Length: 149
Image (cartoon, rainbow, N blue to C red):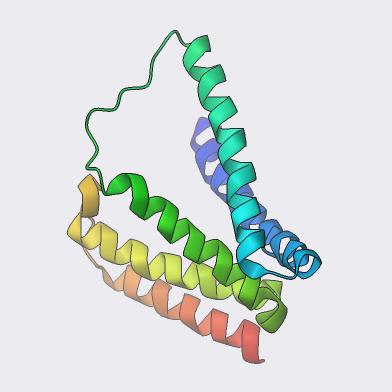
């Protein structure tokens, strides 16, 4: 049972991504600005994460340490997230939820294969296998089918 928990959490997180895109697009329509909607989405997420950080570090009797990560990591993750959220707001009215999610997942898989291959930022190295290549091709084909058929 414990072996299913993490994959199910991944599926739940993926479902949240599918929900987030139309919610943010509706917010953008209401505000009249894609960038403002992305900013509000990030700000609300940052507030929630800040509260959770305080709660969990206090509950565990821990403290946050500023040692370790390279300084650029403090900025790049947020910038990538900003591009992602803004892109989903722009694309969901044009592609629809299913096609957008198919293309997002395809991009994630292709990037994930490259990250695994090179062990980017300490990720365990996994060679590119026939199974991974076939899986990626099937996902690309599926994304195209969801959008165009």
